[in-house]
Image: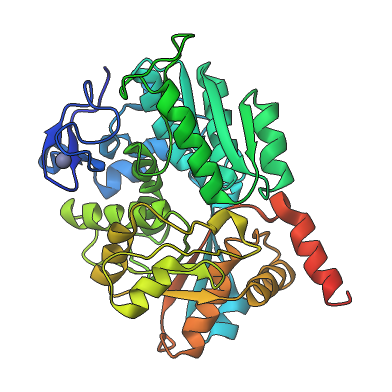
Length: 408
Ligand SMILES: [Zn+2]
């Protein structure tokens, strides 16, 4: 299996055992914990000048800190998205600078492409024939796209409430789409039942001899790994300065966990000497991370009746909440939730004042930043980055009906 020079295997976040990537594909063989790619950072030859000499064309330009080399990647030049100044928002928030990291400009219009390019590359190198995942929407669309490119079958479990674009595009990419009645937790259940039948590691190839390879967040170690490139891009785009705060729309937390890993690696590699404060932004109708943060707990309690228009971040039982909570506490960040009305208003404000298209779920980062400003979290001289995880035109219908509800 083709791996990069400094890649040193998969370390279990629970017991610390290190597994060989040839043998372990998902969870720790010793204890079943989540696995995390490890590197010998002394062997990483990556500095500012070297990066400056490379075109800003894809997240695979950071291949030295990814498990697999660019030449082995299943890629459509994802990442390398623009970081855009939002002067009106900066005025409104009362800070020096607000920048939108516009990950809606990825190949399938979502930040999920960063994780899926690495995870589907791993699946391909592991010899998978089929990939499968539950998704709130964008992750599933992205997985279907990359699976199509790699010539793999994809099985996507979406809740009925997922956006039309997500469902349509899973089909268009040739994926096997399973629309599950109910919400995300129901899609996860349906996925787990299907995996039990099709998972070779679980002892049960089905009658067709088919084995499914999971692309569920954190279940595969490689989605967070791809998301981590966001952190590298941010500091490089800011000419190696570290933003004061990054506000991240948060469902499963895979983006936030990736940014935290990037922050620790950038320090380790000596590329920067600070970390940004990381903030999780959630919708009030489903905010298990915010609730755990405010209560001072190390893990979330599942939300029994999630209810938000922000379907892409409606994750009531995020599997890696301890890791996400550690990330926001260790960086002196925090968690914030705002209600659907404020979130949709923020999406419209960004569209009208800055000309940028932010989907309803990532708009939680905008309204969250607003709320942080109102609570006095900023002094006035900060650079604040808001992560846009999906383009507004994926859910133009939701934004439009919000306007119509306002009588516009
Ligand atoms: Zn373990």
